[in-house]
Length: 142
Image (cartoon, rainbow, N blue to C red; front, side, top):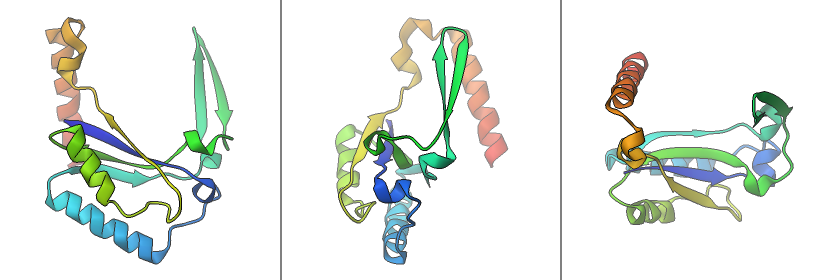
């Protein structure tokens, strides 16, 4: 199963405070461990919400709001995409992670939808389209 591991933002990450050299080294070592175990598929840190935007949908209308956004507890400072056998395995890895903020922090783990999760609505034609897009993406990024 694939899981998205979300590192929640805090006041420091939203203020653009960069991690210490020690934390960067610890996270680098953890990422190498994830890679050696075949768990790590992707991972990145994100700029503060002040550099971002939100697009809200209401029927056919779109409204754009630029950052910063007020609720830091609802914001994400970074993410990983992991391939694991179970949610329990992902939790185990997250518990081994260096504290991503150095102070109070939170990591959220969410399973990624797989094709079989969509049932009959995901027709053979839609599956073929999805497989074709994934193959093109893999080719473009290799």
